[in-house]
Length: 208
Image (cartoon, rainbow, N blue to C red; front, top):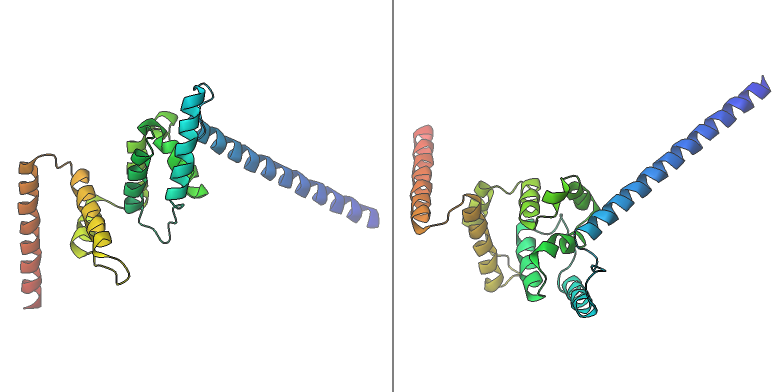
């Protein structure tokens, strides 16, 4: 009886070891896939470039990493973060086709994994990735409209920061609705006012 218990215990131990090994291999494969995705997206310097181009790219990478803190989902607004990222990428003279690779180095692992699940061609397109991130954080045109209308200046921020924030919310609201002409903007303002009046009228009727 004692021998059977020992054999059973040894069998369970071996099964646990196999499971642990399989889990480690899966984690290593995931890390490998993520690293390959970053490299293919331009996160690392292209070995085929000449020395002068490489030097410029390395400088851009270093400057961008220093100028932009890593994104913290709990404390940062993804829409404002992306605006800052785009400005700094332009100042560092980084080509747009390399933006996704640069951005991946600033995002938490779980968000990088989220992007990596997309088809390769789309996952390397910055505009597509930006829409994907805004959608993940549930920032629709209507949410940007609400942020633009309701956003308040924080006591520890400057009026310049406040102007930057509401301008970004307005821009994203208009971009999300594909407002491209002055006439489109006029129509939007009229519709928005009609909605406000209709909602106010409904509230008055309800509380009478």
